[in-house]
Image (cartoon, rainbow, N blue to C red; front, side, top):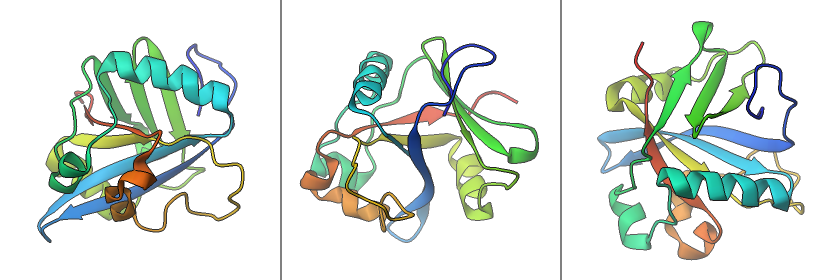
Amino acid sequence: MSPPGPGGTAMPSRWQIDVLVYEDTSSYPVLLLQPGRHDDHHRLSRMLVRAGLAVPTTWEWERGLWPLAAGCSVELSEGSSAVTVHVGGHSLTVGLQFAEPPLPWLCAACRQQQVLFVLLPPNPHTSEDLIIDDVGKLSVSAQRRGCLAGTIPLAAP
């Protein structure tokens, strides 16, 4: 993830792309971001709260009722080798290291015309490859403690 500016330095963080499926029919692309440091998490939290992201209640999460982030957009770069979230004059870029997001994720993003963005608090005690084994586990309120979530529309092509 990189901060604002054309040549910003990377922020230590972990990310995960996943697809959340509701009622076996509606699939939503999810971008999870977990900063490595608490000060980075607080800085991003303040910025994302101003954009409209919030801590979802269990009722909201289970029904896919997330706030729409105003003034934000998600850009799929040329060749789909990066996903960039634009918010408040800042750009948060997740690089995919010469790979493309999985086809189900891209299809869900194009179909829904938006991406569910979830900011997770740092967890220095984990060494697993995945941030979350199953995004559906975020339906448990304890799993969402310290998280922010919201839908961000795809940038116009």
